[in-house]
Length: 481
Image 1 (cartoon, helix red, strand yellow):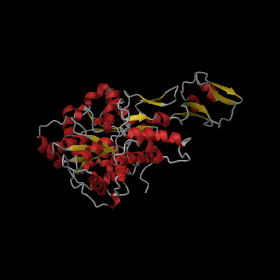
Image 2 (spheres, one colour):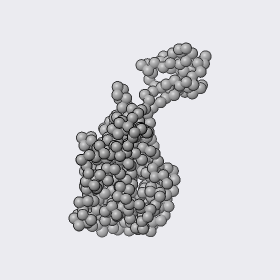
Image 3 (tube, rainbow, N blue to C red):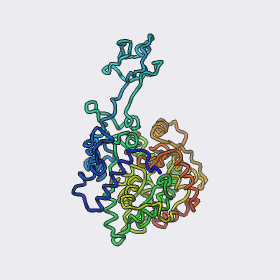
Image 4 (cartoon, rainbow, N blue to C red):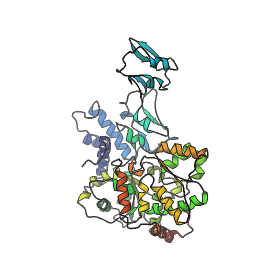
């Protein structure tokens, strides 16, 4: 079975797997020389113009696998040497131009940027403002607006192309680390930096639990990944990596539903806080709405706090599909509850690097959370849970489900100008929700069905047990901030 959607993911996986193998072999001295040759043996190039360029790019991937540029606070980085195959952006005339007599493209151009030369339309790039009127006017569809996939994918408009070098550039002040550009780049020139070295050090230094126990907090979207095995087998595989226990982030989601429902009823209007990329988007693009963001931390952090309340010496590693989580866990508001973050892609590489075939393993139970906590993984899941919690108090919450940044922008604009009729706004940066996170192994509409099934399989049908555990750990009056 094909594990990844694309060959770009496969290349990333090979690099991560090789890095992990070298770390466990304590062989880091020649890692930048050995791994590129392992992955690109030659003698013929298969991806780029020559094996030397292919190896140079793999070398840059190794750097990102080892943590990337420490001076760059952003999680997503551009590999400059790999960003050189895309055509220049802009409006262009294709060979489909028939040299017609109407010249509608020329007549409709507001800047006189189009002339007819040898019966063909020619665009003056100096005059063109890319309004697109010529594109709409051409009866043959011979004029197209061509934009780089990474630029199109970046809804916060944090990614631009340098006019001189033609390389992609990320504006850190606008970037929300959603990872959409990571998925969109056909050449894998944009990559999330990995903290797998830190994860390995945490596990190794525990000395099999003698010094401290390492817990994994797993995102509910795992159910739509690792399709070649059962989730319960993956959990067993994680324990073989050195994790003492695997806990569902959905446990914290259960608690968040109660806390956020209470907060929403008290505030009157509220924005969800479970998606860190959405929260960052609000702060950077709608600062006047920041006060509406829930004061409660995300399910990842709630779960980790509950673990450390019962085991103060514990180390907690979150594993999920989200590049923004790699930024969130370092924020002051998390209080150091999370010690590191690993992606599903990195988990797959980790398991294979340690020769753990999860499909051959026995099953380990994973039954920490309720139906409502588990469906956080899909768009609309949070809103559904909030309505359920509010109904317990005899309250009705009117929800607005914002699926993807485009819908978030529309919903937030309505709220900003007081045209919204809803009072709870669920925002998800990734279309479809966490099941389509940038660092998923696979993406697709069927993933939502997996989450629904996973939710229905939960032994807990209400959030009550999770909330009781939280109150036992912190007390009923504890504010999760």
